[in-house]
Amino acid sequence: MTKTEMQLQSVVEQIETKATEYEEFENYETKKQQYLSSLSSVENSLGRLEVRIESLEFYVDILTIVHDRELPVGGEVDVARDRARSLLQRDEDDFYKLVVENNEDDYEHKIQQAISRLNKAKEAVKDELRDVQSEWEDSVETARSVQKLVGESQEMSETLREIEKFVSRTMWEESKDINQLEARWNNLEKKYQQGEVGWETFQQNHDLSDETIAILQRLANEGEITLDKLDDAVASEMLSIDALRNVVKISI
Image (cartoon, rainbow, N blue to C red; front, side, top):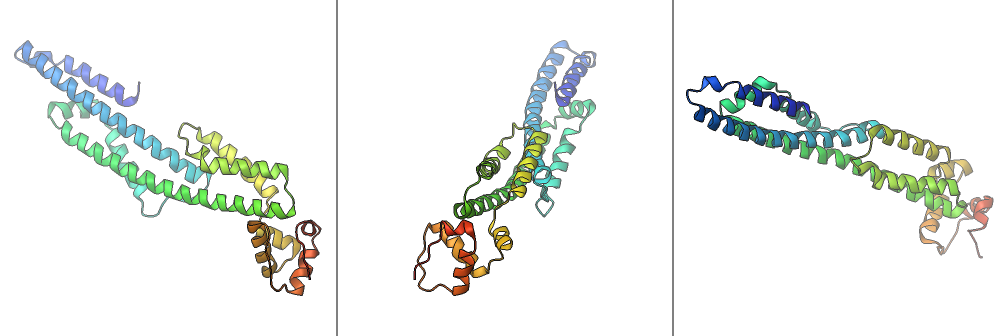
């Protein structure tokens, strides 16, 4: 039983002890059923609110804890959180007054507004995560392009597949445990960095010019390219790397 459910159950018990406050038993029963109906509706609305804030917090944790990124600018996430928590942080007396004073409709309207804010905030966080996904998918594509040229590493290929799977599917599954996701991602990043294959790293390791890298990128993406004119320096750079001699053929 959640905290909210326990609070509402306490309110029910309070209502049942108020029988002597009514002049007639029939009137008490009518009021009791009215209050119970109102409490049931409030409970359902609060349940939806709790689900929405838990969903938002999941994606916030994926962004800030797993990927170590900042929240979206504008503060809409904090505003949505604070508004939702203020509605959830009510005690038994608050709920009792709510139904006795017939203010539950206004309260539920505020809950719906809070849910709307939470949904918008979650979408903003998910937009940031989509950027993270796109960045890593680009990195994976680049690494695979280089591997086509220099020879594939089975271990690196597996790491790239796992990274792609994580950012495109795993991190979006709300049923997952944040601590486990964080540990999994940290392990994948470590493997990627230890065996990182990227054009910048490849260029630095082999002291290649920007022109040579541009040609190799085209070759990796297109499979083969035809050049009307190849600078002697670029040709020399390409042929100086043993791994490239198997994939680059230069005809005069």
